[in-house]
Amino acid sequence: MAGLFMRIVNGEIPCHKIAENDDFLAFLDINPLRKGHTLVIPKKEIDYIFDLPDDTLSKMMIFAAEVARKIEKVIPCQRIGVSVIGLEVPHAHVHLIPMDAVSDMNFSRPKLSIPEDEMAAIAESIRNT
Image (cartoon, rainbow, N blue to C red; front, side, top):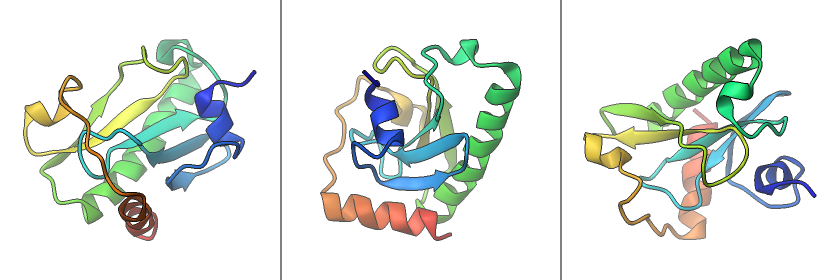
């Protein structure tokens, strides 16, 4: 059975899509630390980010940079932080998190609860930049 992120890639589970190409998908995190918190994943299911082939890893980071620039245009912040945790979902992914302080990247903080319509509006704004 496909994992959670593959089910999102396959359209079995809805997401608030930010960007997509043949190899990667970016979508809003449903348990965000900040508004605009986005996940970037490869469409191929590989558990550990450092098991990705070098060319895939480098292309994923280039894709993530493009997404980060879009987020910065919509979500007020000083920077977009990048985090790789990799324990919660067995599928390589990076977190792109709008931040104004280091504490904005603290995953032990309570997550935001953003209404579905606001998530859709955030995704649309980022997608359309």
